[in-house]
Length: 304
Image (cartoon, helix red, strand yellow):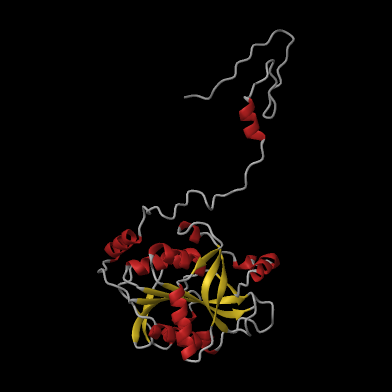
């Protein structure tokens, strides 16, 4: 169908001014009042991040389908991952385990994006995935781990101090996470926080206290934009009593509640976002010695 043509008939001496910006006609174009009002009324604030989100609806694309095709393409058998797995967003633990020869690649892991290593922790073989940074990546990996037989997922990430609870470095067991990212809204209806499984939090705290290991229970702020932690945003988080800022917990907890998965997130508060000298000091072996001690104590205490 061709482009509509405009036909004008001019009498001698009449002129017609047609340009890209102006068309003068003898008869004005009438717009219905309701349409005119709709065109010129102020537009509502954008709500795209919440549009078409129905957390109770089934997903068309499932992790099992992706894993099936990955196994087919890679020629892998369907084998379960260890029942306890760890997310190590910083990658320091994985790198240290590989340096010392403690880690072994899990050859049956079909994920396109990551490598799964195994190592012995608290007399158990556990799995660990490094460098799954940020809410979308962490949940993408978590979905696949639980589809492959994981029954408990621990995430331990470095975090920035928001409300001081000591001199960094120290550990926070995250009991709820302020939702300042997009992934959690696909799994849970809008709310200020994603909540942890209170039983997991209590078991982890009791185990650490019994061993004389310091850890604090408190809330975190999960952000997608670590380099947009403005003074205003930090002050708002402080007013809510938030202890630390990280990038995964809110989404992982929303995923866990939606699916019934068991997930516990810990923040290793290692910095003040570069505001003080000698910042980002994690401790011995980039903080991995302390982190592995914390993880081992929790693994011993939680039955899977």
